[in-house]
Amino acid sequence: MIFEPLLIVELAVLGVGTGFLAGLLGIGGGMIMVPFLTIILSNRGVMPDLAVKMAIATSMATIIFTSLSSVRAHHKRGAVRWDIVKRLAPGIVVGSIIGSLGVFALLKGSYLAIFFGLFVGFSATQMFLDKKPKPTRQMPGTAGQFAAGSFIGFLSGLVGAGGGFISVPFMTWCNVAIHSAVATSAALGFPIAVANVVGYIFSGLHVQNLPPASFGYIWLPALVVIAICSFLVAPLGAKAAHSLPVRKLKRVFASILYVLAAYMLYKGLTS
Image (cartoon, rainbow, N blue to C red; front, side, top):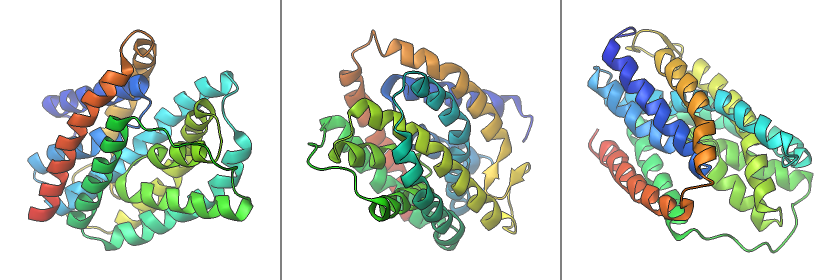
């Protein structure tokens, strides 16, 4: 299964698609990646409960590489608020470890699939309406940002996402300029991904019936192929964002997310 040509093609197409959408719409690839990885793993004999967990974990692992590319571009433009990153990151690490090493390992894959479906449905609605929270206050102090970071890291660990759908609205609500919020969210994706991946690896080391080339819950063939393809294609999506009607595309994409959310809910309720 590791070197199966059809598998490489499927993963490459998924990597190209998620990378392009990430660059075009400024979203993480987890919401697309997790449902399709679940399908790919299930079609290759992985039990549904385990397939969901591995899809979430592998999706998160790809963010380690895509976030580095994104942060580099944002940092060159001076858009990253590193003061916020430094205050949110410790909480993110703690929340991520609790989520990925503790709760993620204890919950059944069917429950995670249901939670993922609900989360994606909420995110799709947010994208479809294109609502921007009104800035009403400043960022909280160190303790408040630690608590916020813990929540962002914990929730990200359960759904395999980089946290942008939580951190960006949170920062704009706290009067951070939208372009800085997006750039800072990209920077936060790295500690979110690293901390969660460590948890996924350790919590999955002794799991039975993992497919070949697995490292804990991380499926290495998917990680390598998707990370390379998405890393290469994301700049093309970012370039296309300047010439395509992104607002309309977001609504189309939100409609697709509803279908994927429905699939994951179905998977969770029937497995």
